[in-house]
Image (tube, rainbow, N blue to C red):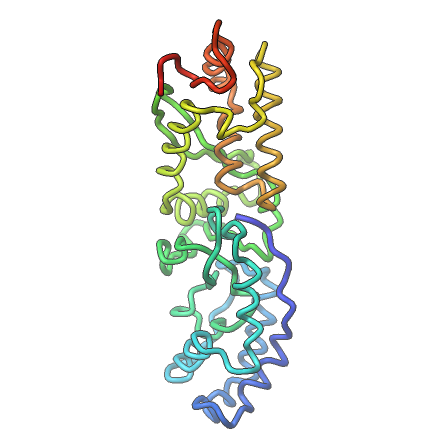
Length: 292
């Protein structure tokens, strides 16, 4: 997950270019929806992309189908939307925080909201979590909705962390919310965790990451290039690693940072310290003696 700047694309001018393009099969059908599209885009922006506040723009098929087709095969006027995908390559998924984004996700699904099928502020670089969540973007409770990378400033905050228990050569792993219950977007943050982040492979990835960490801690947390003498030194080393992941990934809510934040839990620190500082242990030795 990461906050994104708005795309550099004039969607209002794009509407005119699209509906007036006589070479497209959608001409002249879409001309009847020129103003509805423009008004819908404005309302979407004014509602800050809030899935519970954005109004449905009634565009029946086949006109709705034409808009979905124009997303799949953009006309010349909308070729710049491909740049949103290209700019996100090799960066963390803006929706779930995995290590890379390779496609575009419609924050409000194009199946339900064809008016926003080619609206640049509804398109975000994402990974396969796009397929996992399908058309699930809001719940019944007030505030239950997906977070929006262009509008939700809380995505710059540290929202989630791994939660380890049963620690040994393996561990049970969950994800916890870090913000307080009084946070104004707590319900949306919880909905996003349950419906966008958790359905991905993040928990399986973190379980495997733990196994690698206890076998070769310095290879996972490079700042552990010394034997910590106390919990303050251990905490500082893991914190430095976490902060480096934040910087490299451009967000505190990427999977690597969530994993490192979980290691900073006092219970985990208390479990790690005596093992990392055990007599005779070298910096490249496993956390658990005898583990290979």
